[in-house]
Length: 403
Image (cartoon, rainbow, N blue to C red):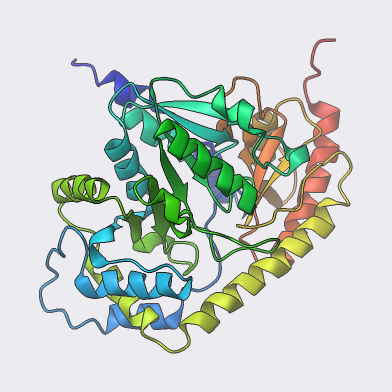
């Protein structure tokens, strides 16, 4: 039997999805599972978007252009103009979700064997994308105690080598909820210019800011040729299955290379692009987005209030996105999550994302888990009650670490 490639065989499994078979088995047995492990919102996708898909004037569902439909590109451009960012159509390419945009960015910025610095904890799919692109991620550790903000310049700069090609970060942060301050973006810009690096900014959660102000990497004029921005409508429109994202840069060489990548995969989804066009053309689109953000603000407050009632759980109130990294009173968060899905008694349980998979540094995150507060307020409150009981019960049966 022929062997598969080492590149694919060693691609890491997602800590967000790896334990899904256990959750499915629990549900098969009749147990209700509160899914706090994945950023899948329960808020209905806007009617304006869905109506645009349903009423699309399509007789033949054809390929769209590799760069995206011109009217969909204009929909993105009009959205960015609302944020004070002016772009030309040549500076944006529509991708099959934000995931493809990250993969394109890594392939455009790096050759095999190059290095990319990424603050940890980070979105774990960066691991998979980097493995497929044969790029080495170099982790820059941040801490919950500091709100997962960047360390001093010298700690970042000591990681830069002759193989470093880019710094990749999400802002607002997944899984941290950190919103980078003006001085932090200034620091990253200074390093990019000093060492001739790309800054790859994953700005999927830009709408979801509760503390501070989000500033796009594209708003820093000095970064013209160094900035690559990744985007997606998945979260802001509660349309994860639409698979519409974007890669954006003012660097013409970056965009030419990205278009070559896009030609190889032919086209992004056609109907969903038309849904975006309809949504952005509707006069209520800003109101819809604002209402969604306010809903997550309320959920954030409910989650913080309920978690504060659980002994041993530690957290920092997130400044943005809709995630929270928890410190848990357990030695092995993954073992606890598994136990909650397989052995916790009762008719309800909770699924979290074990924290270790959000780090590259060995040993970090073993007592942490990520929560995605994507459930309604009632379900969030109930999930926290179940989590509290689960932790209390687990203390009695958990294997004790050797002294």
